[in-house]
Image 1 (cartoon, helix red, strand yellow):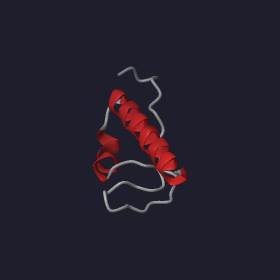
Image 2 (tube, rainbow, N blue to C red):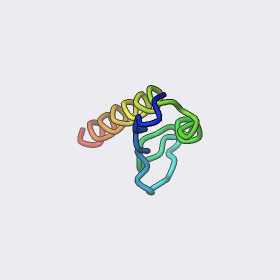
Image 3 (cartoon, one colour):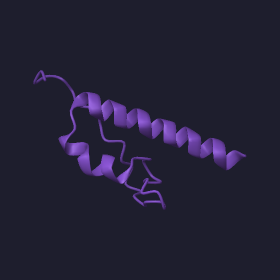
Image 4 (cartoon, helix red, strand yellow):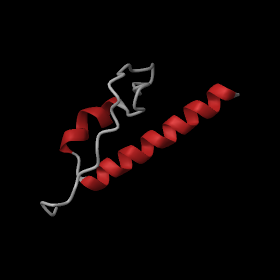
Length: 65
């Protein structure tokens, strides 16, 4: 990693509460993704952010139905 390369920011919005599937209803990360965030490389963090967005979209689609 290049020292000047900026790391993705955590999706945490400080509204932490895990649902029954261990997904945070604030940022939509899984418990494992939360625990591994600080050690994750840039590509992994980007994948986690993508997973969060997918979960968030799915959550709001299902709550409209």
